[in-house]
Image (cartoon, one colour):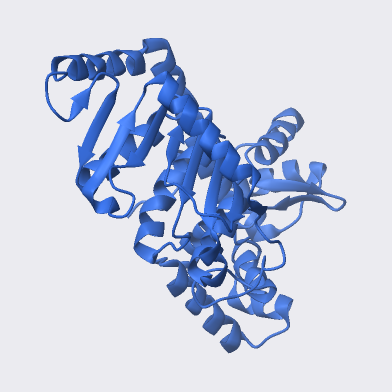
Length: 342
């Protein structure tokens, strides 16, 4: 069976061999890199080749320069960095291709044609559309957030987010925040009394979202790029459906309404940040445990760094893996970072 390698993450075999050598041998100086390469390979690296290998390892995030020389980055952190590089590269290529191909404009044109053809229907009127049923509403929200590029404005009149709604929202919110879209969210005051909701709000805040708490009644709104807005057909029974409008006048009025509610709301309280709860956020000790999954190659090392018994360390790791819904330590570290826990 072929040994697993890093080629699929953009690392050439020579650089991977050097990295594995660093993991086996430890810290190298610049001159020791050439000596060790010569000892561990059949061919002889020149000084220039060794210098190039030294630089490539640091650029790839596989090693770091320290006062004592070149030191290997922990495998979990190194692989995560390589994954992020490939994802960023692929995302950049795809977004550039999408922009140059004008595919979004083409799709929106088809959508506009559909609205125009259906203008005689009772549920569609010009730039305003009635969407019935929660499944259709969710599909509309998915589409709106996918095309959002500059700003997302949302409100939650109840202030309480169930685990199911958070699970669905996390995918959409992460998509928006990853693109550096300016997200502002208004939450009703009951959010302050719900640990699950607060933990998710702090998770969003750690990723760049602006969140405020309102003690005044809120109207349910979703506004994207100030050109499309979604409101419930019946605020008292949101399951009936929603009204989607792209009418500039209506959207502008709804933006003004949001701004008035936003200006009268209060900042998300910072005092609760970092408090551990059963539902979500982690305390300082748990954060250290999660961070050690990157830096400590063995449980024994992680336990020693935290000053606890190995058995206790493994117990905490297992509990955090279960909370995150991960299948292994590496995935747990990735999910913890994605949620802003570390």
